[in-house]
Image 1 (cartoon, one colour):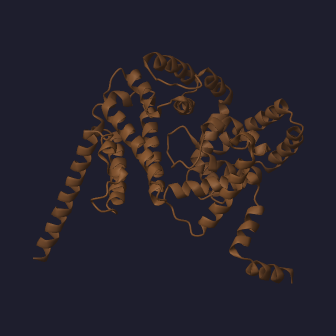
Image 2 (cartoon, one colour):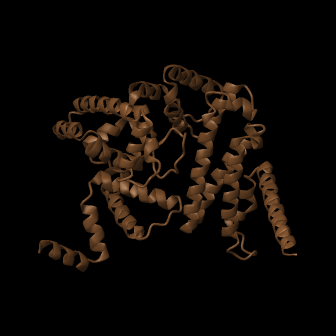
Length: 405
């Protein structure tokens, strides 16, 4: 009887009512992570039927919170035990980034499914005890004790996960379990990153404290100083070096300058020499940033935000120019292949946008001033690539025609 009543009630509800009912069942952290995940998929160009209404509701909720917060700054999320647990990851969290394999960052959207898995499947009893111990400490604002309890639980989780992820079967079972909480393919990699960061959290925090709050100019003196800090950190924690490098990237006013670490270490601009250094990852990290800008460009064009698209495209051209000018023989490397692939994709997006307007209309994305940000090498590379595609297609057509005759 009750089940039939509940079914009739659900059918009678409007779509807006159903969305409200669904969101009310989620915790504030879960709603925040859901918004992050939906925006990540939107930026990546993935269409999800029915997501528009969810996004509208979630954005309205968090926008209202921001407006009511004094000083106009984003409000502090409601403190909860999971937030304390993930606190060491906070400087490395990013929103909506594509799933880069070696960027040194962790997707914020991965936290909710990881916490759900830890609480429900991995260590349910320990997690429940941790939450019960943390709640009165948080309510009494006993920050030091709360951090101590969180650190103890972090250590327990890390030790258990090191054993769980120590075998192929354990990794496979973990992937299957996590898939019940999220469709993101990045979450397993983010779990491994979480273990790595929590294992060296104290050393990583000391490294972060030693860095300047902002690096306005990454000149030789500053590069030498940061390299010395990274060398000292990597001596005992080589596996966590990407995360230390990500902290450096976060301080840079001009993020692409991160590659100075690699060119300085190689004492060369040759791509092969740079690839042999411990800081070769910085080139991949800069390419990751370019890929993020490509996603931002796609989202801006999709939503007709031309000025935002212009800013993203300018940043893209700046990064491309820096890579081509500061690394020799780039086109003969895997980095060069990835750069060419990204720039070809970006050029296609820009051409599709500009072609929507008559030739007499000077589109801001096709302006000479903006195109001047591109390097000649980049333009020639894409022209050669298109020429090869045209020749390949022509050859295939001729062979097909010959076959008919």
